[in-house]
Length: 166
Image (cartoon, rainbow, N blue to C red; front, side):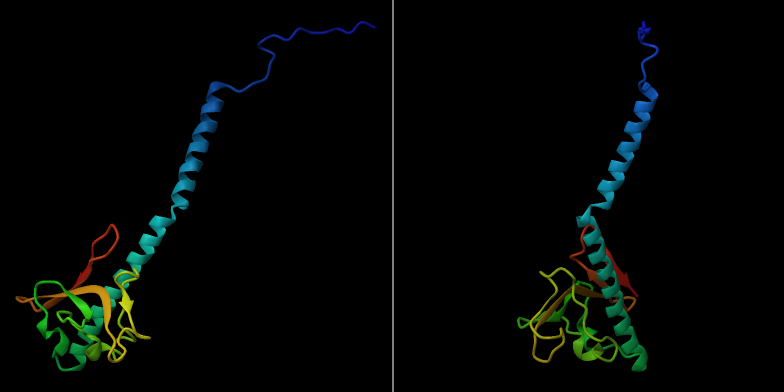
């Protein structure tokens, strides 16, 4: 009853080759990079707020031009004081803001859009355009004197420039 034992040599031992290890490390690095990109909530929230801003500036400008189309080419009275210098859209007790609510809300817009950043999109009433309430949209309006075109901009956009000119 002699058991034969065989001496293990280096060639008989199992293991991973260098190429196998490098491939596994490469795959893990790719998976880590994908996970970090997918889990970056700050960037996703900024993108969502900027998408809302883009929609809002287009809606305000559409409301102004829908008013013009419905009134035989006459612009809303509220935007007649717009200049080439961007002016805030809202109603301010100090003055200086352009209040488009009486002209385009609720006929052309359900309510005045507000910047999604709570610091700039503030209102004191149930709606932005409630009678006697002050509001600040966080958006600006400028008028090109030469071409009679308006630019609505979102100056508080995050890592982007958002403006629409028509």
